[in-house]
Every structure is written in structure tokens, then in C-alpha cells.
Length: 221
Image (cartoon, rainbow, N blue to C red; front, side, top):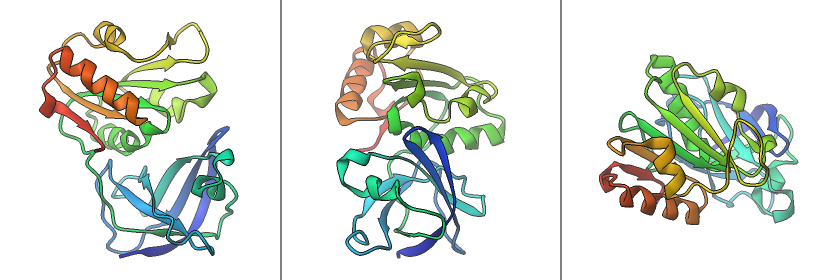
């Protein structure tokens, strides 16, 4: 069932990421990590059906998406970048294969962090962040989504990886097997991986080579 919802708030999170908030329809339910197909209530874009992940928590009175805008792509996110409060999304039913299955490491590339935002917020509210790790890859420091929030999460170990610039306090390069071995150590835990397809494939292969249980790898298929 599709819901047409007006944007109640827009916040710029980084130079190219916007957080959009909507009033949640009565009875609308989802679990942290799930997404929905989204269109815009505008000619030519109602059936766009691009997937975006909910970054609110289920118990909030609002729905929220945190979306990276690609102005040069001439697609849905370019259109979203032009929207104002009062404009409307068309939001489908929740779906997705990323869900929390136990303590472990979250590995994200760029906007691939969005399925983990609600999961980490859930763990923060429960007081259960200790023992979890976030490895978050971006090109530049300015690209890091919600860095201040992640840094303030009590008990969460956060490692930022930059591929486009070398800076003190950051890992540099691509997340590969050598980096994972140095950062993780034991693979006897859950792993959650989200990002560009090639990155996800490479990281999953590296984790399996390191001895991770394939059943302990959670990613969007």
C-alpha cells in the first residue's frame, strides 16, 4: 500500500546529503534496516520506485530518510535535492534483508551507511552499543554522514576510512583483506556490509577468506 506524505522538515547533513522527515501514517510499521520504494508526487516521478532506507526508529512519530543527492545524475535524487517542505513523497511498504542479528561489525561505503543508522540508534536507545564497531569508508572527510552522531554513541568503536585524502586519525585507501585483518582481528561475530556492489562483493569475499561464517554476513541482496 502506497502512502503520499508531505515533507515536514529538511535538514542538510553534509554538502550532498539531506535528511527528510515526514509524519508517520497510523499503523505504519517497519524494523531498523528496512527500506521502501519511493517516488515523488510530481509528473514523471510518481512511479520512480527508488529504494531508500528509513533512518528513524519505529517508535518515533515521524518517518525519516537520509538521502545522498546526485545533481549530475538527472534522476530521482537530483529531483529530491530541489524539494521543499510541503512537497510530497509516495512511499511503499517496508522491505529489506538487512536486520540486526547480534553483536558485530558494520562496514559501510558512503550512503551505504543508511541501513545502519536506525540499527545503531536502536542499540543506543537500548544501551547495547558496547562491543559493536563501525568501519565507514568515504572519499573525503567532508563526505562523512552523521559523523558527530556516530562519534557520540557510547560504546561504539568507529573507524573512518578515506580513499581520496590522507589525514591524521583516518585510515587511508580501500577496505581490503589486509585492512580488515588489522582492524577486526577475530571473525567470530556478525558482519553487516552495505555499499556499492563491487565493494560489498570484495568485502564479503575477504571476510570469508578470513574465516567468517557465511551465515554471519548480512547484506542487501
